[in-house]
Length: 366
Image (tube, rainbow, N blue to C red; front, top):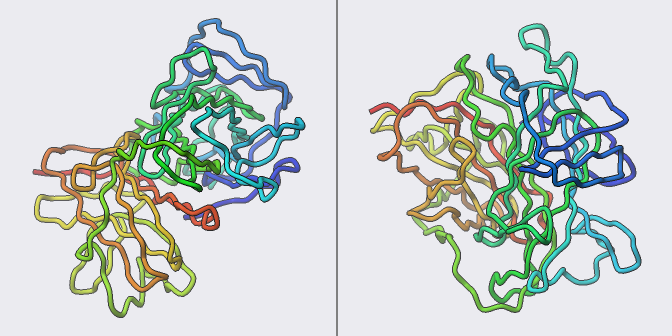
């Protein structure tokens, strides 16, 4: 996927959107449920006043999802008052999720006045952009809230109404994720989650994913994870993946799998793709790493139980010796839907290999 890297403050930020660079402003407003956070660049004020959103539905209404760029990080305040990345090398031990966590989701959002040529409409900052925030860890959905006094939920919906810097508080109440000395708590943000373009075009990447390093001494082992079986891998001479050389590639995709060519033909990003009952509509993943990953499929912005009734599939490509190939069951789905798939590393040393497919518009025909 195409990504444009911008330098954002002194923090090390990962870029999570495909777009051109945006402009900066001196103040910003973030709407999240009934909480408004006014953020004059680094200073966050919280109000419980209920707000209305009259502009968010304008974004992308004519098929345009370009013009938005976003840098981001998950931050943790240290005991001496410093602020560091929640996976920083300065952290000598993971955060104990059993004790609850106070995190900050830092977003530097920009709206471009002109992007990718005249065939796309420009996006004005006041149009607003909705985003769903979810937290995942080792195949578990982790509840969170924006305030310790609020009830924790599995999803928080926000609306960014102008460009600038946002500091979004993320509170995780004491949570039992089982017994683990080292795990990654992934903060995943899905922008425009329920968007299906009227133009029939597929979409670019619209998700950001950034983790915090955590541990747990609990006993709750329940997770919605399907452990990939040997039959879920393609082994042997894997020369190409979606047409690219696999020497240094890590990637996750979806599309129609060709058993003869032993590869997946990725969906066309700018066209509606029709999947019929006899199509092998599959998720594929390939990593040079020998670490574990969790794959999840999003349909219309919602994680679905795509893997044998489970939300996540745990996979390992054994250092690039094999490729994941899993055929999706679409028997209970029809019509047009926006599909994407994300891959979340389980190991802190592998964190930069978090990846996602583009979001595609898929017509499931019966």
